[in-house]
Image (cartoon, rainbow, N blue to C red; front, side):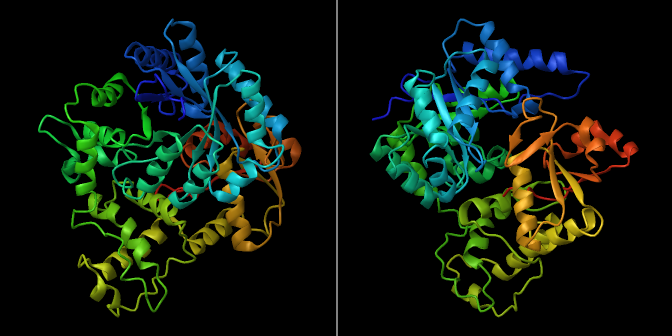
Length: 494
């Protein structure tokens, strides 16, 4: 059995949501973030998850300062991004050492192969002279104790990662909405003695925002939905720790309260949860009786993901589309070529539905969502032709130098089959500038004019507008600065 999470508090601290509001409030925001870390340690939290780029590139600096001010014992994860197929063992080793140095540490307890997206990515990462070899070297030298992987793949593929026997712990997304799907993963991990660390336990806030719809998870009137959701996850013996992505002490307290004064045993809670996971009749149970659509619409997959819409509803003020399409991609790896609805309204699917759901209406809604959110390939082609027409630019910069940008370029290749312009990567992260990432050299904004860059496309989903505001002076130099995403879009990463 793994000892990766032995003597570790069941709530860990995630560091991606420290509230850095602006340059003007930076000093106070930094101090608030440091105090939040110190507060977590005082409450007994002794596992901290951090990665480069978290909290506007500030999380590592916050931890460095917090560690200087405490005598508390803590475990911290070194996360090294494994996405770049052009890097080798030496690069990943050096990056891990760099993160340690930035944290002010000589060693760390845990190491994560960060963001394994599918089984091909996993196999590349464990190949000779790649990131897994770097992790083994770090462990041999005593710079880390435990090796794990952060997985963003379908649950059937996670089983193959577990069966590889290469990891002592795994970081996965698990919550009330996918708990049923994850049962095989959790059972297999427990059988193999692999500890499970959970991210996204409240599914982007969707669960506490819809308390009445998740009442079934509660086992007493005094229990909150947040407590019930966390306790439900911890009821499975494979799950050792749940990450709290907290921005303030109140949010952290909500997580911590879930592991205090719980009078219900794990076994009783787990049995209760399994009883109710698929009982709510608003849900598609994924029986797949609607599978034979004459127009080849992936009806079962769409309807299963539609559970999100049934829970939340769709209105102009929600981000339900982002949650919906992310679930559709994570669970089924499903994409669409066009937003044009091919449904002919024959009713065959509805006649076979055991839950008597409005499938035709739901399918129409989803295709309307496609066009609104730029999730399908036709919409994305139109967006590319609008922003970076191939006849206009020969030198195009992409900002930031991230996995997300590489995903955008992969989408471009899929649509147009070739890239007719020279690619330059830009970033404000000083540790990236002058280095090679994903096969391209990374430049700063000050170098754009001398390079002859005609256009820079900002591809960050979350920080696109901020990056634009910080660099719009480039437009005075004759460089077209454009933002890929519009307010109604969903992230193309998924």
